[in-house]
Image (cartoon, rainbow, N blue to C red; front, side, top):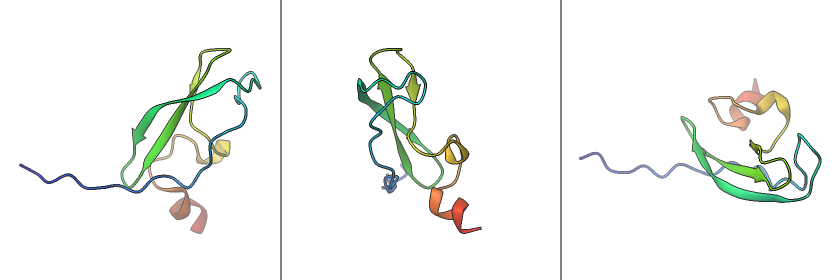
Length: 71
């Protein structure tokens, strides 16, 4: 059995608004595991869409934001 590795959380803050409909009804939905960190997922209560916080250039990337922006 392989021991569980604790991955760090992403440094991104909770979003104030939905990036799709601009609603403030945002709630945590779970997390997504990337290679080197966990990203928190959020769900909009108004439009029902799931999203990750942060700039569009950093969303849906495999590596942590610090490694992407350092290059």
